[in-house]
Length: 180
Image (cartoon, rainbow, N blue to C red):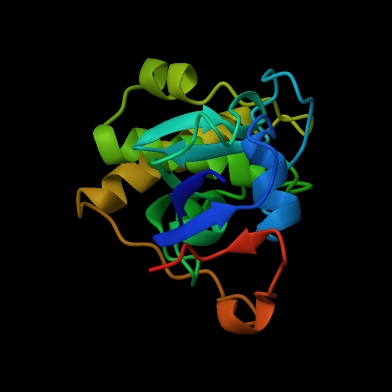
């Protein structure tokens, strides 16, 4: 049973090792912010951060993720205070919201490495597809998140979610904490 750290919590998935990480996160861990879009790595809706890199979870098996550190949109910030999340809201770069978690994860990975990205850096680091066409606002949002990260700007906070993370979490049989 593959073991890894998901959102700073050690976990062990009681699933077949060739299960895509996407399905382990969604079905076993109940982390449904990671979206299924295309299943072939083209759209980026399933983007998560693995060991600091934005990667498509539909292309990685839980066996390949063993021993790694994974952050999903739920683990980025429990209160939506991450600069990328704040900037996406402030720049109105969210339309239907389906692709937003993947975009936020790609943006967060970029900002963690480069808090002053160029337009080219942003376009290269965020390959996500958005049917609503928020690309110009998306670029502005990532630039703004960089300024916030560099402490050149602040953003009035977007509202916190209406439910606590503890209340939202459910015990799911396929997800177990590893034995101590």
